[in-house]
Image (cartoon, rainbow, N blue to C red; front, side):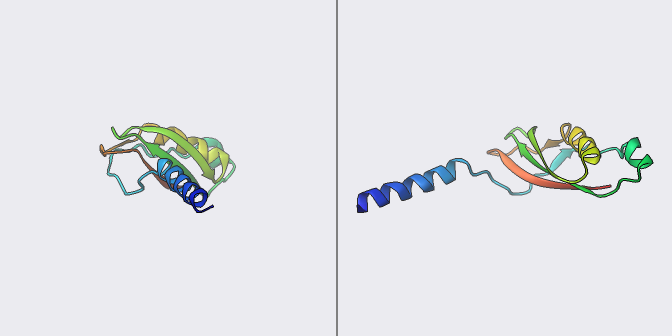
Length: 101
């Protein structure tokens, strides 16, 4: 029974460390600000958009996840962040960004 508990504990610890990413701040080398969409201006849509992004060790953004905010504003934010470039690091990192419109 003790061996089984140890095995399960090791499996949980190993699984958690495999999916972990470093969330330390990385310097942004190239930033593109999202443009306030014309349709949002006409409809008087304001607010914040949150995105989670994954950054490769070479500094390129390779995955984006829309977390919250108005979809019209989110589209502009996603488009802008795809062009961002971060400083190189030893491993992949993730971060959450917030844009206010």
